[in-house]
Image 1 (cartoon, rainbow, N blue to C red):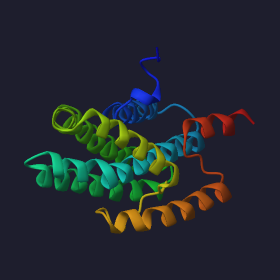
Image 2: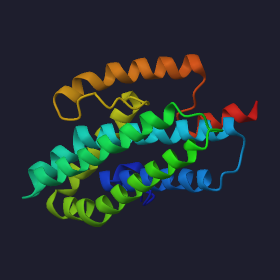
Image 3: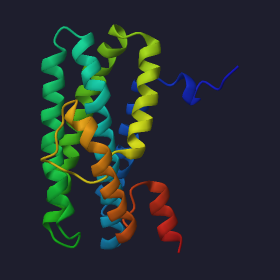
Image 4: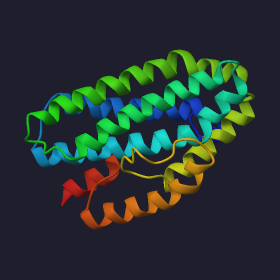
Amino acid sequence: MTNPQSTEDQDVVDLLVADHRAVETLFVELETRQGTPEYRRQLVDVVIAELVRHSVAEEMYVYPTARKALPDGDQIAEHEITEHADAERTMKELESVDPSDPRFDDVLARLTSTIRHHVRDEENELFPRLRAATAREELVELADKVTAVKEIAPTRPHPSAPDHPPANKLIAPGTGLVDRVRDALSGRPTSMRELREKNQH
């Protein structure tokens, strides 16, 4: 008997909700305004990387599935993509603001608010409807695709990059590679594991 939390029986909704919870934990930590400006910058870098990977995966696989499975799937997908674009512009702005600048918390608050609204929309509307309208095997298969694409997806916001297939599927891996080289060269953490390792030294 497999562990109920094993990845084999996780569907794409489980996976995306887990992403949402992980980002919310980081938002809550940032809202305490604890830690050095450098540590807060690193936390924001992790949030941005997590959100970009998550968005790219949704745009490649989840929203196209919604378009096929739901009668109003096109409108839902376009609405979600518009919200991603708003969030991405805010992330781009946040990247360039120093954590000791008073604007940092304002821009962060705007991002937090946008993402929380988006998460509520998805978890209350899109995800339950997607589960009801899509075969379980397809949702489990989508979880595998999302997991795989997050390994090669960009880690920085690219507001002008395409957000619809097929163009996003062609461009994202190359952009992701460039982002990961930049992250490695600059020592920018893109996950909580990397952040913990960086702060142990």
